[in-house]
Amino acid sequence: MATLLITELPGEIGTASRRPVVALPPLAEQSVTFSTTTQSAALGSGTYLVRLIADASCRIKVGADPTA
Image (cartoon, rainbow, N blue to C red; front, side, top):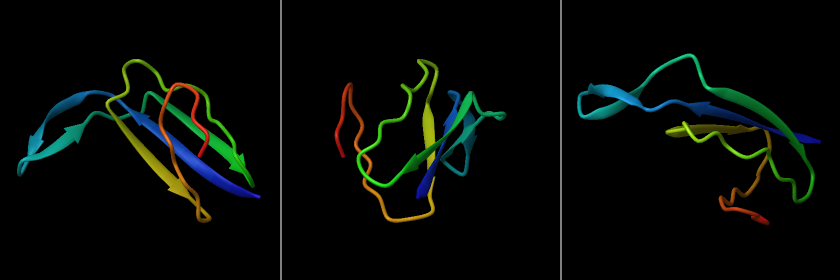
């Protein structure tokens, strides 16, 4: 089975060379194992930026009850 790592980062704290800079540590981290359609837990309300790392090909869909 493949794994998708989801890292939720908090709001913007400033800019560097006109690029957003976010604060660390992350608000939350999830590891989702998938082989077919799989939903993660809902993202937190304070999430500003999401980092996604998959160790296999996958599709990502964002919504209230998505099916990717």
